[in-house]
Amino acid sequence: MEKTYETVIGLEVHVELSTKTKIFCGCSTEFGGEPNTHTCPVCTGMPGSLPVLNKAVLEKAVAVGLATNCNITRKGKFDRKNYFYPDNPQNYQISQLYFPICRDGKVEIDVDGEKKFVRIHEIHMEEDAGKLVHDSFTDTSLVDYNRSGVPLIEIVSEPDMRSADEVIAYLDKLRLIIQYLGASDCKLNEGSMRADVNLSIREAGSEKFGTRTEMKNLNSFKAIARAIENERERQIDIIESGEKVIQETRRWDDEKGYSYAMRSKEDAQDYRYFPDPDLVPIIVDDEFLDTIKRRQPELRDEKRIRYKDEYNIPDYDIDIITNSKKMADIFEETIALGAEPKKVSNWLMVETMRLMKEHDKDADDISFSAKNLAKIIEMVDKKVINGSVAKEVFEKVFTDDIEPESYVEENGLKTVNDEGALTKTIEEIVAANPKSVEDYKSGKEKAIGFLVGQTMKAMKGKADPGEVNRILKEILSK
Image 1 (cartoon, rainbow, N blue to C red):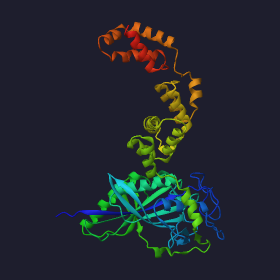
Image 2: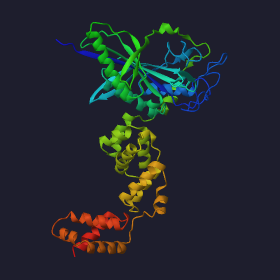
Image 3: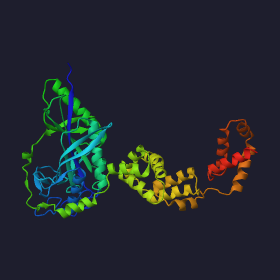
Image 4: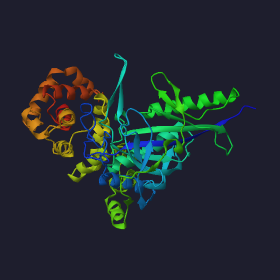
């Protein structure tokens, strides 16, 4: 009988927090910049320099902990994780081993209608390392310390996931929670959210865990899913050939589609952790905790329930709109300016999604204002412009966030409301197209569409199609 295997997966998710300055110094955390320009003696590990905790890091870490149902550690501290690597200028990383800021949380995921909880073992704060830049042309490696000292939280799950789909659902849930909190932009392509996958397999029905491997260098959901499937098959092949899986750290190469061994997996004692003597203990008192609780925003799950009750729009629209905090903010702000919810939803679901695809943008890259979208909807409602002109104007709003009323005025795009001029144009179109008139009168109602089109063309798209239809039918019925 052929054996069946179960995949057991736990994740270590590193998230760069969106503070203006680094965790233990005043250097900028801004992404990019010339190498080694966002640095100082503290984040480059100069002798005698002293770290001071950035309060905003603690606030954001606690906010994430509360949103993921964790217990908050009321008395904690930082520890030194000792190891040598060129991108680690101090030869140690300041992290939390013994008293992580958050513990014992959980988030609910939904995969194909099946809901389950993924438990969170802990969330701890730490500093990021620098970045090695490999130059293949000169066969050298250079170090950029701009990222050194950027604040991170590491979210360590329990081994509760059983498939790539569950892993992606869990990561997406974390991403949205953290984005809604404003704790990080969670851009995988920029490294502000990174996941290490701990994976093992075991025979279906077994309670005992297999030997796990850890995979690094995963910077997209697609790469994570591919790496999981690849590692699962690799471990099954090893076991079925009578060999044993080695506990090790592996690096995934997404271009080549395989992973390779980096090093055998270290245990905590290999890092010689000890309390950091330069940092004072962390005390989270009731006042601090209550302040963070009061600041917690409405998260996606709550928003979805409210949208259904308050706005009466389809579930599909709700899922798409709330899948990005930026999109949800624009939706709500546009409604607050007086636009009807379904009309706002239509503009976001149709034209915005189309233009995002055309311009290869994510929802988080949207730069147009709710005020300008509301103005377009208002102009259509008041018949200042028609639907096709509105789409043209919105495209300019999407790319350049232009002021719609000025653009319409300057480009002569207002709807022609002079009934006399419109009737005269329609009469000329009718006279010039006797065949279409004859088709319409003989029962081919679609023929009127051609006449409407010709009229709109003659009016340079600036007529109200409804009015054109009405006047045409009046003329044709005579």
